[in-house]
Amino acid sequence: MTIQVTVGVPAYNGAATLRRAVESILGQTHQDCRVHISDDGSTDGTGAVGQALAAAHAAVSYTRQPTNLGPSPNFRFLLRQATTPYFMWLAQDDTLEPTYVERMLAALESDPGLVSCVSRVRFVRPDGSTRLASGTYPLQADTTTNLAAYLSGPDDNARQYGLHRTGALQKAFPTSDFLIGYDWALMAGTLLHGRHAEIPDVLMVREETPLRDYMIMIRRHARGWLERVLPMLPMSRDLIFRQKIPLRPPVLKALLHVNLSAHFLYVGSFHPRYAGVGRFLHRHLLWRLQTRSARGEP
Image 1 (cartoon, rainbow, N blue to C red):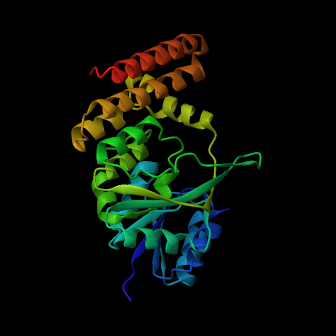
Image 2 (tube, one colour):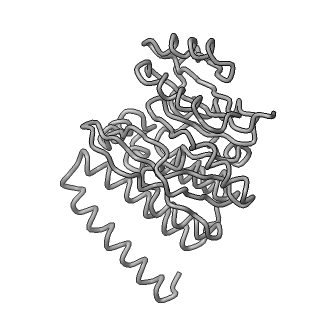
Image 3 (cartoon, rainbow, N blue to C red):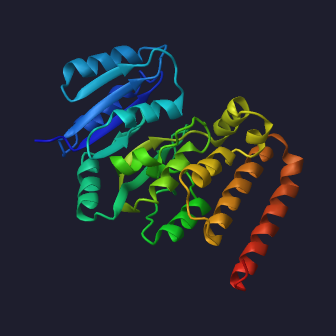
């Protein structure tokens, strides 16, 4: 039987949780899955765990990157290696319920207009408390409406860990490396090729990364001051110039909103006095845009 699904597992210093994550794939009711672990130059026991899993299971392969690529290139590497019609990533500290792949695949197979399907997702916070992800909502309208809805609220973007049509995902993945927002550019880009579905049951559990960690990541890795204060600028460039999203008023307004939101979130973390004024201006601008839209003005 032809294997239909590749599950890419990007790993970095995940020795404590990698086996649990991979075993949740191997325990799927849908058996035609290929698992590819890409170890991004780990310095702990991740390599030993990955090699042991590959030795024990024919469906598992293990690659160790000679140098640390970083998150976005490691995700891209796994996606580019995939030759199956369907692909998904699973983070090294996440787990799937046994019917996850089966149910996502059934939805995609039943509707050729879908490019992505994800279940509801439960996040586990560092203190052990949980919350449901807010970023798995379905996007079932036309391209412009879906893009505007998504860019207005990507939220936690848990949809990135859904099951996708490989070809659409490969076309949408950013070709340049930027750390913050590449996953939003990716998911927005897939909407140029089809719609997103949501299975309303919780079939994935993820460990939540504190928001502060993302703000620190921006400060450390942004390429210059402009990308630091406008973290979503690389994402916007990719969507506008490479993927050529339709620049209709609803999409432009949503893109402006997500850029301003990220800007004020970042400066609010490090410059709280400015952030208070900035949030007021942001709300005023959004009110003006909504008012003009209601009047039919551009």
